[in-house]
Length: 250
Image (cartoon, rainbow, N blue to C red; front, side, top):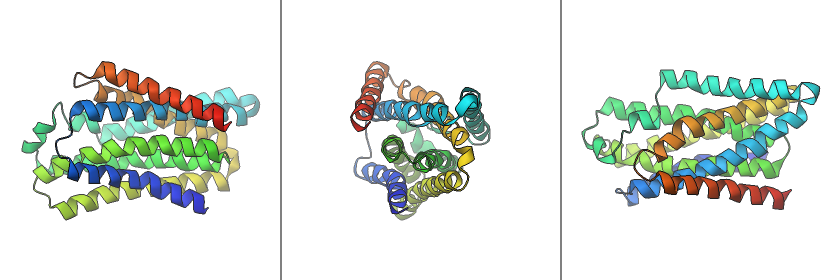
């Protein structure tokens, strides 16, 4: 349990680390941000497939394929419904960071709330990984999500400061978005631990949410500023790095 809690704090704390970087370097280039986010997308893609979807097939028995496919689509549809209620990064940030200078305060707060809401299923995915009992894969999943949280934490600082929010309140908002992920991690872990029968579906559901985030949020964001070639290779590097780690840890 201590390991799960520490990992949950690490995953949520990655957002705070990103926020701290955002305070120090307010004019981070889109190219750098896109490369980091794409690398994280590659890590998350490998984690979703190797750490969640493949184990779901293995634990599902004779109905494994049906359960896994159903779980993947359930996870994707769940985030799709959330997106309809609260649009996320590429719908609120816009093409240029400079656009935040004229951002309306309500829009900025909606943007921060969107990140917090999207962090919940990501945290659940990390918790489900630990609930499966495969700690090596669980760390890979949590690491991929944490990597994604760093640039996400970075990007929320500039618009909040530009909207007139104090540095203290800006940091507290970033901290709150990270705490949502800690809560999600604990929910995922306890849900699977208490009801092991739902493990195959829960793994696939978590994998589906991660695939949705990668395709709908991360890839469009990293291909929107002219750095798509570098972003593509960064994604491949992240994916292959996780493949190597999976083989070495396996």
